[in-house]
Image (cartoon, rainbow, N blue to C red; front, side, top):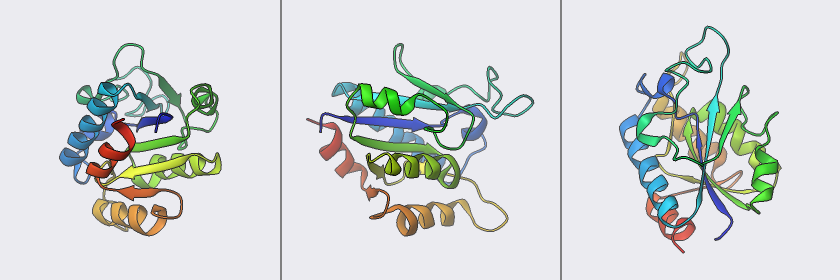
Length: 178
């Protein structure tokens, strides 16, 4: 698939350093995907959230920075956003159209917020979306654990409805390697 991009959403210090569910495995898997995408001349698009003044994701702060193990190389595209969806009030759709993108491999944080909203916006914009297993994460909340949220969204809400949730191996073999 020549028109695939790897989209890394909100992999920022302010979130990752709080150690969400399965974070070490998620970071390692995202790193593998970034390495393989770059090695095979596939685009890596980063999405960074600005939660506003006085927050841990305030633009320009340490928490707002993309996590060092996943940081973009010079020239890689970064979308700045203020809403859950990376498509809402950004130029992401126009950018993807300019690259003739038809498939998005979507990874990052947080499962039930920005990943869910971005995935559904991508679906509404008729992109094929791939969610590699163990490449998104979130935190426990007052209702569900991060693990339950991950499983619920990946396997009950998204898979075979809005996206395909597939193994890392299948993702690397089918969607990155030419």
